[in-house]
Length: 313
Image (cartoon, rainbow, N blue to C red):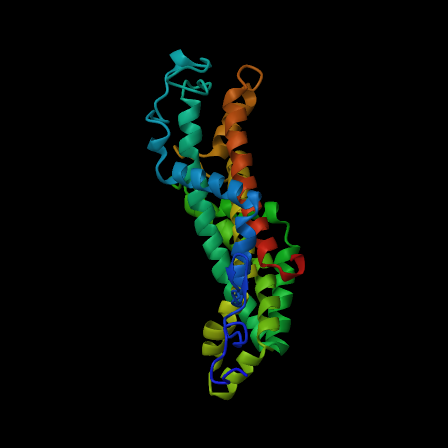
């Protein structure tokens, strides 16, 4: 009979952590919504393609000399409609200006106006959307009807009238006129998204707990509701950024946007349109850069929206 104090290894209880062929089992840690979204974005080739395009466009706007050393305002009629060469990749326009240099430098005005206008629209949408969604009742009724009134105004017609009025001064190059015009007309969709997000978030348990602990409306909106409802709002602003780039080019093309010695894709397209049969490059290349830029921002916004939308998982 064996000694009970001596236990063989085969009889000893197994207290080791269960393992699998690849090593010890790991317990999955809970992921946040942002973590799940980032995991999906890393696997989305559309997100990476759009991000690379946006990065290149931002470099063009911030540091155009990285892409070309030519002066976009250096023009000579002796070079009119000359074809592509080592010094001018896209040839020259009807004024003898380097088309490639003007296309590269045209990104700065478009990006600058679009970013500032989007921030202005975002600020207006944030105030109106959060106030409408949080306070509800008569505040929501008044602000919602105000949003409907602004939505009922034809955007292009209102933008033309407002931009023309704000840039009536001949010395005005139209930058701030277009920025303000796009900012005060483009906030409605973002405001609606923020309103619906705030209505959904304010009914959550953590908001009720914070309210019971004595948090006021300002603290509730800024510290508890806004961080948990900002994701769809940021996505809409990303898409709005691309729309504002196209809107600026449209206003400049119609002659109510940038003017004077400003360099813009819309101005380049407008100047090259009458001479498209003689030389198509001065019209085609700014149009291509404009289309790719708008598409890149919209694709980036769509990819982020899909990643943050639980219904699409």
